[in-house]
Image 1 (spheres, helix red, strand yellow):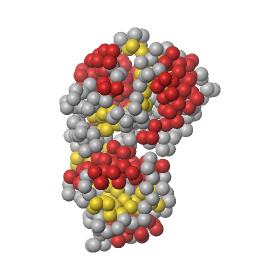
Image 2 (cartoon, one colour; image 1 turned 180 degrees about the vertical axis):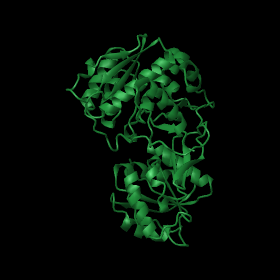
Image 3 (cartoon, one colour; image 1 turned 135 degrees about the horizontal axis):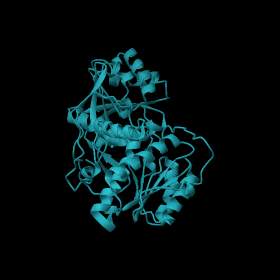
Image 4 (cartoon, one colour; image 1 turned 60 degrees about the vertical axis):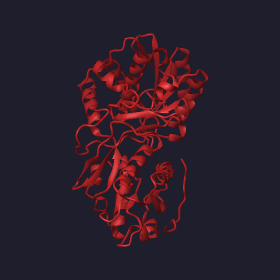
Length: 418
């Protein structure tokens, strides 16, 4: 094995709902959240809210977390929905509240009541919202959206013995009883590495930006390559927007007829990837010889004509489920939902299904972490005991100015850690 190049590892989802709830709750080994037939990608990737937080200030002054006092339904079983309805992320929060209301109405669940709490897009607001929800009898907290707010809300929730199903993309805030129902880049890394190895790829290299996102995925990439028995030929880090020197250092591994790697992992945003792709082409990189692979951030039509990415592959949710959800949301609210709104829909739908099937054990740890997982808008997902989420993802290939599914999302999740 050739020695590794210089590296600096940084550890860091038509439907009337009664019919939908059966498939939503998936028994062990019986997941049902599969995709439709492969189709060209048209949806942007799920937003990485914690890695690049949007600033969506709402008009008007702050609202007290406990007094944003809206609720959905009047049933005896109470859920709390903690979202940024004012302050940072308010536009996303409003859309997620709409999605939760849509899920509630479609599920026909008169036995539930959703306590909607505004966290004001800030940790103090999240802590106050969570404390108010617990005091009002909520059995589970759905939200918050941002990592620091999840950490703040978790304190009163844990003190009361209530689980949290949050929407952050920051894996470091996951913990026992604090589950992340989000699109974690780690799951995308696992899927694209798994697909590459299954297709005969055995030697991996990586170009990783010195960004929060790059830091979040490097350790997962190393672990996935090792777990699959593949070889790590080289990793280089580079300052955002300046990949040239790193590509030069990695040239012997990824360019020329004697390239040591057969796969190049590039976890970059669309803007950053355009720069990297140009530098790779200038350095003589051939995607026919060394296949480029990445995450859902690659799901951008403006990238699909770049020469260095032709034949490249990335992992992302199948778009069919979200498209159907978006049509129903548009018909109800007169606007297109942001990608993250599907998470709030899934959280409420899951809560309804668990309440109907498991009664008093609806939100117990053993119920929430069932190995077979659950079917959501974006496919099958499973909460792990450590709070992270496994997801069934599709693999897409870039070719001829488009991206097509070449590896459909599996209907059933593999055993965790394989």
